[in-house]
Each structure stands twice: as C-alpha cells, then as structure tokens.
Length: 300
Image (cartoon, rainbow, N blue to C red; front, top):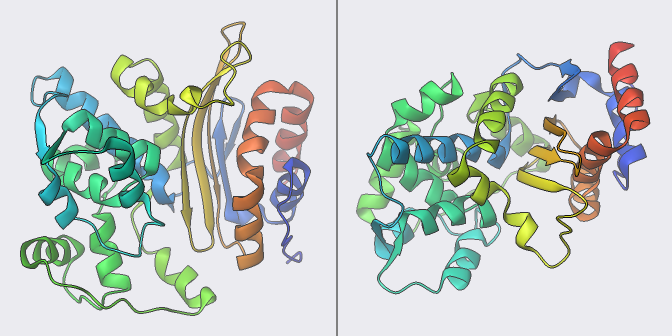
C-alpha cells in the first residue's frame, strides 16, 4: 500500500491521496461513480436525510415550519463534548426563549450541524421515514455516541431514549486514534449514489435549498460566481461532503466525496485547509481538473 499523504494542504494533495488510496475513497458525481454503491459512513453529511424527511413532512402537511419545539427538550437530546460546540453555537445564533420553531431547529441541523437537532428530528418524523429515504438504517447519532463512548450496551435508540428521559450526566470514554477510527466506522452507513440522488432532489426543493445554501449568506460568498448548497461531515479518520454547485450559465453538478481511514495529521490538515471542499469546487468549475480526477480513478 502506498504511504499515506499526511498533509491535505490543497486540491493537488487531495488528488494525490485519491490516486494512492482509491479503496478508502468514495466519489459520486455526473461522470464519476467510484465506490458509489458501497455502504459507507459519511459523518454529518447523513443529515441531508433528516432534511429530506423534514421537507417531505411539510409537503404532506404532517409538519409546519413554524411549529414550536421546546428548547428544554432540544437540550435534553444534547450530549456534551461530542459535537465540537455545535449545539451551543446554534443556541447563540438563534437566541431562543422557551422554544424555537421547527424550521429554526432544521437550520441548526444544517448550519451548525447539531447532533441533538438531528436526533430530535428523527424522533419527530420517525425512523422509518429516514430509513426509506436513505435506503438503509439511519441510527440516532447521540445514541451511537452513547454506545461507543458512554458504555451503553443497549441498542442506540434505547440508549438515547433513556438518556433523554433520565437527564443524567454520562462519563465518556476516550480512545487512541486508531481504535476510535475503527469504532466510528460502525455508525450509520449510506451508499454515496443514494445520497447524491437525495441531494439532487433537494436542490430543486425551495425549503431544502434555503437551508443547504446557507453558505451563500456568508460575507465571502459571491452569488455572481456560483451558487452552492453543502453539508460537510467530520469523524475520526473521515472527511465527507455532499455539495451541489450551480455555475452562472445554469449548469449544475451534485457531488458526494467521502475520505476514510485518514491519519490524524491528514484529518487535521484537511479540516484546516478545507482542501476537500476546494477539491470539489475545482472539479465543478475546472473541466481539465475534473478530467484528471476521472482519469485517476478510471486507471484503477
């Protein structure tokens, strides 16, 4: 096996990593289907499925965007020290009173990537609704965390249900990086082809696209250059992103990238540089680079 590239500093480094480690890469887009049907963990990119369940429920009249959700209940789903501060960041942005709206909760799911919001929404819409969209089981995120880090020996749904009901502090176990990387690969998996299809559908949905296109509301965004909707994911050893890019000429491309079994140095450098994101953006806007990526994977 080729040595691991531990510095994902730019798009060329990501391409070099893909060339060297194609078995740990999944890439699905128009013209490239690499490991597209292999079930794989995708970290928080799975939250696109929760978003799809929300939009489906609204369209069917089973949910209303302005319906109130108790902040106390939302807090009860939160497992401290497991989400990189996403829950607290969402509360700072929303500045809620006793409740938030369902649509605000969904915004926390996508923008801050709050795990508590994901699990509360899964309970709100039902596990079966998410499983049908994903064409695979979608477990509770914090239930899985309680199983992996909290020592709960029950099924993840039961672990989380008891945690929400009892409201007790849970002591979390830490692991060496390599061991934790193995453990987190046991969480919910989805085929990149399925995630790509859901993303393409949500791109055309007014409710979903408003949430996915939250990056366009940031100061650095340039809507005259391109339109993007995105959901990224990070777990130990894994970086993922599901993104669509619409160019000024109206041409659109949906892409799903999963990079697994990354060393700690590669994970940290990829997070700091945003190189996987820039890699996808370059694929969407640079035909020559897209051809290079396609050729690298077809050569395998």
